[in-house]
Image (cartoon, rainbow, N blue to C red; front, side, top):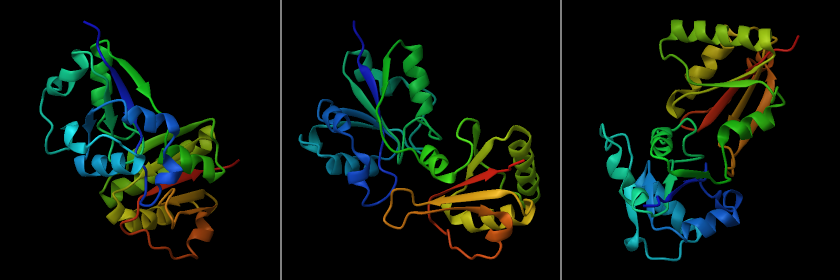
Length: 237
């Protein structure tokens, strides 16, 4: 039996960002399928409504892949795909599979020989890199840094050394309610001449992106509390 296709459907990064996020083919795709694997059902349903879903949402089949609903087996998520139906995979925000648990679903799709099709849409990592002015040919995304302040300080210094040694942009994130503490630790542990870009609320109405040296950042006061942000470090020769 022919299997269905798994479409990777990007979700807007911020409130009121729908018009910046939806490509025509994304809208066509969500109106062609009725089954989804999602990280957050509430977010997914809101996205589908904003994107222009024409069918009643009561007709949708939604498999919730949230952290409280994951099991050891991914088989239940593949029932429709294995029977030949196309399915959409959606993250809570941004591109599924990138800094996202949906990567496990994509990996399983490949193991089962299911076609995977990524759709064009917003990705905070690439948007931040584009806007930073840093090296876009060599970069590494590290996800979350250690919570322990000593270990975090050590890791920041390691990333700074990598940035200088390889002329490589270093990207990392934090849980939004700990952003201010992370920024404080970066300014405490990085060298004054190291460049830091802070990209916050990307695509949102209050989007904030700024690049300057650590020395200049120490003279500024910004509040990143509970605001999605990405941090980028870079060192020039």
